[in-house]
Amino acid sequence: MNEINYRNLKSVKAFTLVELIIVVAIVAVLAGAIFVAVDPARRLHEVRNARRSVDATTILDAVRKYQVDNEGDHYTEIAGMTVDLYYQIGTAAAGCGMTCYLNNTSGDCVDLSAIGSNYLASVPYDPKDGTVSLTTYAIKIDTNGAITVAACNSEGEGSGGDGTPPTITISR
Image 1 (cartoon, rainbow, N blue to C red):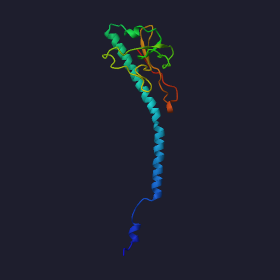
Image 2 (tube, helix red, strand yellow; image 1 turned 90 degrees about the vertical axis):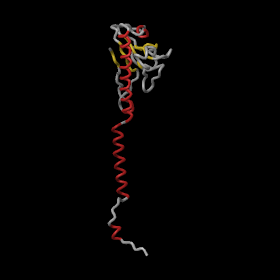
Image 3 (tube, one colour; image 1 turned 45 degrees about the horizontal axis):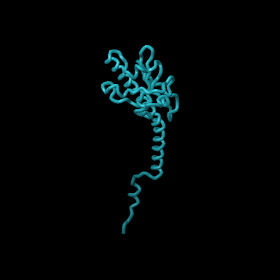
């Protein structure tokens, strides 16, 4: 018959079930701590706010390039705006002021979609809740002719979107 050699079994090295459970518990605790430290929801808010800043700069650059190419004249939609009043950028016929929470916002939209692909291939819209008709970006012109482009609905960068949202405005 088969004889079991107990001396050979004692020399076999292996992990016990208790050791494996302890290792899995330690890995789980470390993974949880890293997940909390990284806070992916907060990172998403920060990324969307960075995108809003880039989009506002893109819009302002396009408007300024149009003005330079047209001997200082503003794009017709911008030239017809009331001074120091924000207009949401978009193609909607109504409801433009309702989704933009900036001070001094007009109820009218400014349509920049026909400005030309040389200046703006497509009008950017908010990465979270913007559409082509209501981009949730706004534009204003002041008495000196300076243009300001702003993000209407920036997000707080605290955990879960809490905290004071940053003001995202670009002026030139």
